[in-house]
Image (tube, rainbow, N blue to C red):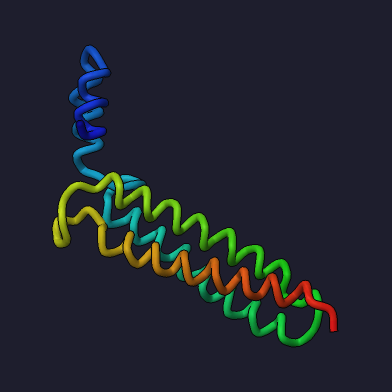
Length: 127
């Protein structure tokens, strides 16, 4: 049983068609394409900040720690929201639900979290 069917059958009254329609469009943040684009942009920001933090962590101990934490946070947020977006969408590519943007968000989120984690590990080392 799909989650759309479960929600449509458990909600009684006039709310069931609205819940079914909102889940049928899929995605997070209104339009599926817009929500996925924002999620991918957050992941891309995590990649950029993670790369900057990684270059700062090579300079010395404690450098770029705040940036590394920001990159890990942005990467994880992008990763979780992208997976959630992919779970809510039902149609394939080219339907306007933002599946391609969500897949890009997964990739950017994973890369950003890894770069931030590497920078965080390097910033803890003592010389």
